[in-house]
Length: 262
Image (cartoon, rainbow, N blue to C red):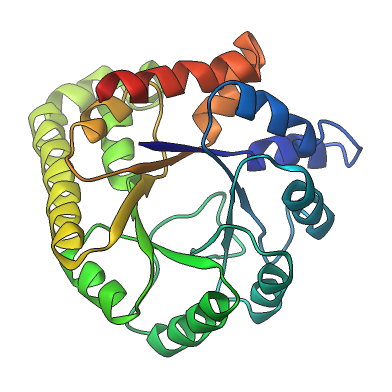
């Protein structure tokens, strides 16, 4: 199973002071030495963290394949066709969001996704779609002839956070948790079933399956039990852990969890 490290939060820390460090480029060797399989960066339309120069430098210097996340933006797609990351993952974007809030709307963007995907594939760049784990999205992805889908694990991760996070309990109170615990446990189980059903459908159709968003060192264990997911894209939790243990160790800790799950 592949572990991709999203290093956007390193650039986000840099942008907090608008200075030169930390430089996301410096993360490449630590990720590589720790056993990561891929580097992921999100080049947003507003360039709030990763910049064009970051993308170009990372492409030039990375020993690991690059997964470029981006919106359905023609200019960014042209940049990808020129510099050729291993993969482009199309994600939705909203200016006001803190992080990506859900999967792509495939129905309303079908033609644009198809056109941009075809352009990338002609230029030898694989295409993945970040989608909510619904079987109808898998069917649409098959029609779009993409190489892979990345299932949005945010709903599962958010429910798990409500059940297990001391910070959430502090903000919302234990009484609220007690009143809703059984319902939350059921919702968490249903979210995992939904991920498995989407994975099963993708396997039936011959589509490679990845997963990501909100995954951390504890909630990933149940997702790893889902048969068929072979690609995990994880960022914030690894970068957060690296503050205390260093980036190499943080990546290694996550890689060990994934390897042991095999």
